[in-house]
Image 1 (cartoon, one colour):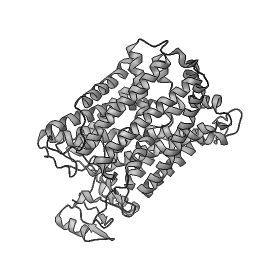
Image 2: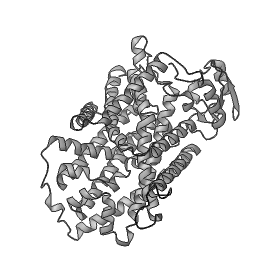
Image 3: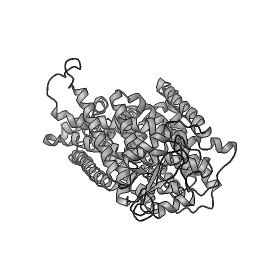
Image 4: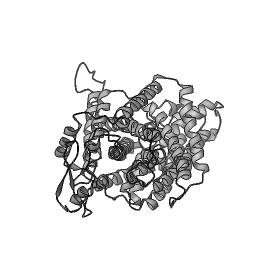
Length: 538
């Protein structure tokens, strides 16, 4: 497969032998483009590669940590406002959880058929590019189909790596910064930007950039450190959710049911309102596919991926439904709809001196969520670089830490740019539109693989009706926003995709290469102490 902007690798038997014979040291690897690539032996396996360090508990924590972000604490009001009643709102939250579970189970099958990191990216490569994934084992396409077969995968990596995920992390980490820094800001009127540099907005952005730096450091140092931090944050996050649930259940037990007694009173009859209500709910559940992005780092993925999904997604569904039940028990519909941060209003009413738990919960939740998203998207960046759809240096692994350091640093820098750039809410609004396009594409990939690779062993297999149903949902959610709100953000999405197609034609299909790429690759290797992963030499 043509490499976009990368020094060519010598993949001959001699190169493999040099790497295999160099245990605990460094072997110089020749390349045709004049760039130097070094490969160190890792773990006695003769090469450097990502290590399988995520067990079942860590996989569940990854799913829960990414799915539960700031939304359930800050503004779970859209579904209530659009559904019109507490009864229908709860139904929508349950159905959204069920849809997310079905989609995640379909991804679990894809993860066992295509045991590669990258989730949708890997599935598109295998289904549409004829087994183009490194080591995929499929029949490589040739001719006209081969030129355009990798395009869906390339566009997936293009959108996710350069725009969608960094912007999403920026918004989440800004929420973390706002709630973390609030207790340290002086009371009284806000200081205007013109009067003082150290205004609230500047302080929030500086705190956010520091948090991004800390996240990037954690994800560079080691997967084990990430696992430990994420596990602690996820447990703390669930404890805060549990405090909210207990507060709401206590109110129910003492007979406070005046708000819930309204049931389905005021339920909307507009199909458009229902669509937007589901749209809001499903966005809150987004993250259920996270574990399939890091398949190559999951221990026994054929077992732990389906199990982690079967545990994690229902757990989040239960937490979301009980928290919404608690909110609706304590707060009236107008209070919930008008509250800028519904959980804070809930805490003020019910938690008394323990109100500080809510800002703490938002901070823990958002940092853990952003940390998990960065961890997963760097693995997508790693796989895309390995397949030639990003700079090949982005697929290099640190010689001692066995983490994709260049990919992690790139995501940290992009996130910082989005934070400095200011308001990116519109970008996040169109993110849902793009996400469900790729989710639908993944269901098409599953159906294609069922037809083209029926002989592949499937330790886990979903009924065919599930991917068809999720595909219909994805089409519905991709079309409805354009019909109900034909705004500029969707034109921007189309423009971004068009740029991706142009880059694909120039650098992948026509194999163009910028003259400075070899030098850049060498400098990245020297500065970051990274080498090609073992799979690039096999």
